[in-house]
Image (cartoon, rainbow, N blue to C red; front, top):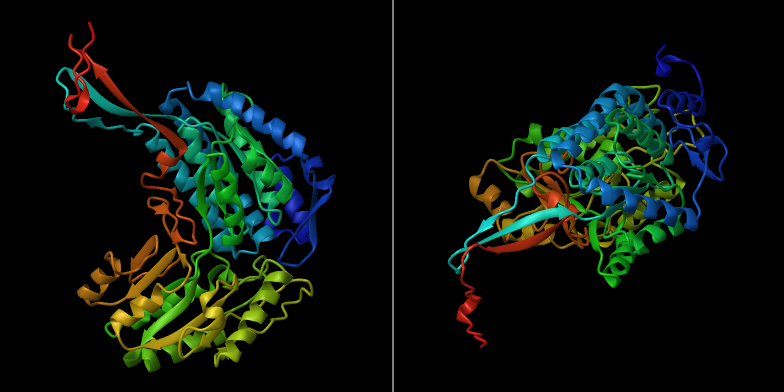
Length: 510
């Protein structure tokens, strides 16, 4: 019988899914760290946490596993990730439902997150046969110069609540095919999905048969456990997804011991609607980009610049969409917008709206919505019309607030677009080739993701994901992001009988 079809509590449904996925019941019923569902606000688990000493011990186990795993041929390592993809396909409905329960995502977004996991596994399997190095021209006759790529070591993964499993998979799939072991510290707000993902990987490991013990480790705990991971000398790389504030702490700690960082942090993303834009297309893209996942994506559209010539055509339609969008329980309805993660997110949203009003903003939406769960924080997405960027517009509020501003001059709007601290995702809607190409040029968008005629959200795994400035500069997922998980060696082989030195240096000894 389908678990989702049963008329049971959210806590009971979460427990049933975890049991079905093979998670040890003691891990989520006999611990000291509570987990709550934003859907209803009810407690859905009590998780066992690890101590600092236990975390360090697991990192040591992961390091020992890496020493063996690095010697396994990369295509063979890819076989493990292929099996993980198969297990995720089997578990897609259950894990997607658990994502909805624990993160509050609507059904299609919960399932879409698991599909993202499957997609990165497919990508990584192919990549396991393509970890290429270069052959480099050398100035010395009888010599060959090349680069080789080797496994790096233990990869630490710190993930955020809003994509509780997809971000882990981006890192885990690449790290595993690159010959690394993994240690994951998930968000305290979404630990149950982490237990489920580890159980799914454990099934793939059992099918694989001869992977070293300790290849994947899970650390359930608070900030202090994350600090153990960040500070451990046998973790040469930490990929951390979260707030810019978190990145300001993680980055220097890693730099202090010369470890690598992949930081994917905040995003104050903007879109530009030009006079030639297809307004129907823009409307749909803006609506999803700004309201999807209740505004809790790092790629959420938060600022919108609309040319004055089309402002009165687009914005009234956009306001109508904001007034009519369905908000509700993602487990029991087909609503497009689910809950905020917790009360702190709701309070932050209301504070930003109040500040926007003090700067002359006119607000549509933003009020709390009663869906029958007193402890769930549901809100109407807020559209705030501003005459210019001011106050909270320059800050990322992790909630569905879209600041809309008119513009007249293209050069000036590019300056306004780039005038925020973060640089993750961006978008322009235009049918003017000069405008689109300028937006993508060196003096256009300063973001890691720049799109034309699509929104800021919904990145595919084939492209490297990440951004510039206070977004952290890290890249995860596709393209050549795999290089961050390996170490490069430049090799020169002398197959001649002479020993010429580079740059014409002469050093003859008797």
